[in-house]
Length: 316
Image (tube, rainbow, N blue to C red; front, top):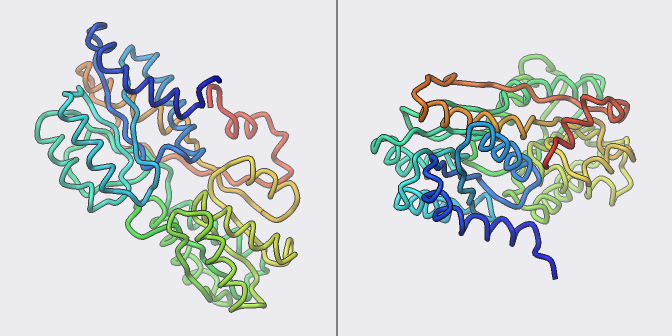
């Protein structure tokens, strides 16, 4: 039987250390919030491309679950014990990961933070989507879909993850400031879990039968919201704006359950994170902050070559 992608990645990570030491090349540890979601699979593709371009070796390892910050701390500690030359991390929790990231920086290891921030100082670069701006855009687009009136809801990701928290803050602030006739009637967390997101969406729809729309701020909350709306036959009645991309997202957009997808350039996030650390190791000064816009995609956009490349980057 051929190995699965996850088995292949695990085996490659286990072999990375001796291979690196034989090559004499710099080695960068890359620690995503989770390894199973398509968003981070695409980030991994960008990481691998940057490693090839900058001739560095990469050890990729992260927890299976975005809520498992204890496991992520263990992974970072292990990489420090292995004396990686650099580190790139997407923190599961901005406070929980602060100490171990600050420890890495204090030892002189260049650190890039990507996707989701951490309460540390001295890292060489921060690479992420402009998440607050994306939340503002989501609010304006959902208001347009609901004629700037009625009740809407937020299906949120989890507390402590900076990227999604910023999206949610941007959405809420923009609705309050610009659309006084739109009320955010419900806010629930899906806790980075599709089943729990589905249950939360079901609760929201049951409590608010006249709901006009939902903003789902992450991949898994999006999938839960989509399943709840589809299951109740509310396609086109409850307007839905989602975040991130998967095969299920695309199916939902094509069938009309999803009105608009907001998609991050995950490949570039991974590429720029490794690029920043590699440049610092080479004696250069990397760009201290890169904010990438999220792209709003409607069904009509799916045949656009630029959109197709974003949704399916090379190597992902």
